[in-house]
Length: 257
Length: 316
Image (tube, rainbow over all chains, first blue to last red; front, side):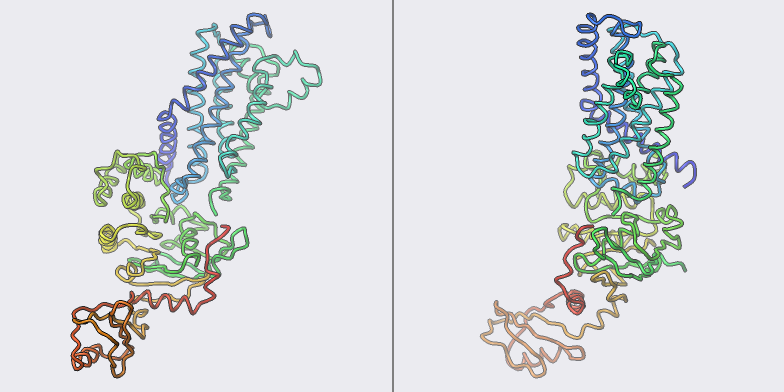
């Protein structure tokens, strides 16, 4: 396939993915908007007003970057894992497998689709947050780069999960038992300075901590970790997971007999 | 001329240890209409699955129009169109989208894909349903949709795995005419089917696979010439009480009073009528007891026993 044909195949996958999650918007776009609004009301307004400052900002302003990132992470991941796994389940993945689309284009197409949903949700949550607090962007390039890379990282993660999953339970295990705890413990609701030294050390091995703090640095200018270390960590994770995803695709793991 | 498909020493052992293919050699010429026949679990779908890269081979070589799938997989796939045995499209997508999306995977831009999709959806009688979600189609329509999807990129080799399974006779006949037309226009067609009349009606060359080995690979004409005995069913004008004595022919009455006569190769059917006429028995209609190819097929597969092992491609 020449470059034009590869681009056509890539856009076909991306547009199909976008069409899929916009067609079922009530399942894909609405729930995170509702959930995040509840977080803003309960944690930001009701409880936050009693907590006081966190990291030099009022609590609502502190949690907004973390909540935006949480929505981006969850949506990017779940879009790819649910879409690709349902293609496996319905066997429509065979449409792709019999075609000449190279594996890296398949991966790129799905990751872009996942990013489209993740970033779309991120934008929706950001707009909703404006109803509760003022957002002053400290470093726009940092905000954009962090959110794009994080979205890509979790979209690749979702793709690996979909390849390895053999039943619907496997699709929900990682988001429920890995992503959610890591996100909650990744400094969305608190600064790790509040933790005892030992737990601060433990938190430093949580990759989501770096993403939340990198994004928070971009918006508020404060971070528990060096923002460039955050970017380096995200890039390293993307490289490793992309390598794993391509290896699994080449082996036909979960998609070829 | 390069063969449309060349398979050499193809083997496949599934993770469970089940040896589905034990060294298959198969050549299909360009322009051929080829049938791959065999009982359930014989290795038909595994063979075609490997050609379409849905199944990973354990050993051997596969070339599609000269392109080795180990070294030129993308080129090989560009020449292939696949109609699988089971419905494998997104049931929530619209008919038109399913076909154009497939074209997109082959790098065909939407404008061009739309023209090709219209052509095949019209030919297959699905144009009126183009905006319907695939799940709303009948079983026969879904099968035709898979054919339209497989043809949208104009492949030179079309592989159909039991394309008419569960399709009514009228629709089956119209699908046969469509496939014959495609073949006349130069598309090489390989099909597997359980309807042996289908293979007999459509195909020029036939391979029979059983227990992961090719037990026969020849032309249909040559295969049918091997048929040494055919059984004819004759309906007499009046109900027969007992089977007549026919010199040189074995005959009997079935449970419904129909006369069954075995005619061996070299015997003349006219002799049967002459003898019946002499005994005052008038025949009003006649048909063969079984499809000729079916008789041969059953005989070949039985020779390749034990049949009880030919169960399923379990654990794949």
